[in-house]
Amino acid sequence: MDIVFIEKYNMLPPGCRVLCAVSGGADSVYLLNRLLEMSRQRGFSVCAAHYNHCLRGAESDRDEAFCEKLCRELGVAFLSGRGDAAAWAKEGTMGIEEAARMLRYGFLERAADALGADRIATAHTADDNAETLLLNLARGAGLRGMCGIPPVRGRLIRPMLMTGRDEVEAYLEKRKIAHVTDSSNASDDYARNRVRRYAVPALRSVNAEFSRNAARCAHLIREDEAYLESLARAFLDENLMDGTLPAKELAGLPGPVSSRVVRLMAKGCGQQHVDAVMALALGEGLGYADIPGMRVVRDQGRLRFGEEMPAVISERAIQPGSSVAIPEAGLVIRSQIVPDCPEVHSSLNTLFFNYENICGIMSCTPRRDGDKIRLAGRGCTKKISDLFTEKKMDRLQRMLTPVFRDAKGVTAVYGFGVAERCAAGPGDTVLRLDLLKEWEKAHND
Image (cartoon, one colour):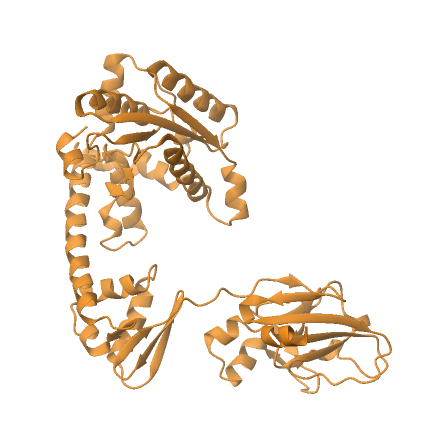
């Protein structure tokens, strides 16, 4: 491992305790052994942890057992954990790689707490860094994405980012140190594997030092990125006042700086959202731009970066005779069945449905793409999005307007009325919904 690189980022100070993430593969076995060697020279201690993602059946269990045996033989305190990454990915509607990473890092943080570690070392190599750089390039990343894997993030450290796999393999072979092989590394199902198997060898045919050169390139880009971000932070220190920025001054910054100012104010926004904010900054008068998580308003020559926008309302079943809260919209829905209802007077806050014409279970949901309704008394079918537009509803109002539906489709829209097909009349058995503001419910209770 590169000692100069490790010292530059103060990864392994004397007296620290390092948790080594061990998968059983060559890279992590190398890291564990090298950390133990260095600990005796530099005065820090080492412990280890392994996470079983349960993705490869018996092979995953083999890896866990191998790591436990390895650490026992080396006299290293060890913890293991496991979770079903595939099931978690499906439940969270994310990729398996992302789910596995989230589960693994969450476990490593807990293991570090349990073992008293103030550093968590992972075995990312120069080759991993090069692959990450190529993946981010293929995905259209900007300068920040081209920085590759960060050497330090919180208590996470990557002491092997300047170490190539050739060095790892030579070390293990010379000392006859065993490790396991992950069979999924041979699969082309994962984008990283395809980059590793095809793109990297092609680039190495141009220059055998490609991976180390890419690591050095990422290091230089990281320094440029840090400098540009420091200019953005200096602008914020001087100009940010009560969550607002001067529009003309922001628009007058060089693009690489202004884009970073926007991203510091609105975490996670993409280039199209930066462009929207900059277009807003160039305008006059009152205006706004909606970006992920917030609305940015231009008023009196300043841009006000608003609070996070609430999440869209969640789907909830309507059970007759009960109440259901819709806290996102600040509403409580009370439902009841009224046999032979003597009087029907649907209003904005009270909806009457012919119960016999409801198909299946009624639910309250947000608007969905393509939703349409033929409102009672209107004589035409309209898209709900068009109804919202006619009423000049902003994005937040659209997100938080309850839409009622059954198995056949939309039955009502809060604030607009009931669908013609299930509208009730006097003498019908009626499903009555009263939509109360939360303060009204508290008062009535």
